[in-house]
Length: 189
Image (cartoon, rainbow, N blue to C red):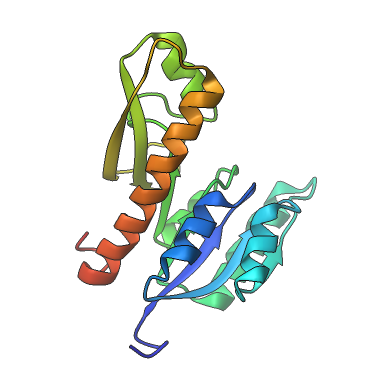
């Protein structure tokens, strides 16, 4: 399929880039326009190594300025879909109203939203948690769920061991979700 017919995607990532790497390695029939990071991160290096434009867009003390910068940058790229993969910033309402955006989250939403989902699941004493891919709205992990996969919690789990198992499930889930978008369109998955 030619680039102009493939799903045009921008990836947002703040950290190690393991989810982005899973997407790159899957060699999905996507047109990945760029990876944008708010931090000097390994995700930027992984994108560069894969031949994908890597854009560093640090958050300044003026959050409104950054909001307008990211909206402008994404607008210039004109993606069909923005994919947040470990991007640890809340996107402004103007952004999510304009750009269809999905996010991965290390819990079975609506349980355990926010930045400490794995720790919160362990503290709650639940028998399972998992990973969710959801649409991003103006809330924190409140958008409509697209797909989920459960991960059992064992008595010996630490936050680190559980998070590692969730990351494995999360990598598979984001690749499966993106493949469903390729197959069915972003409104049909």
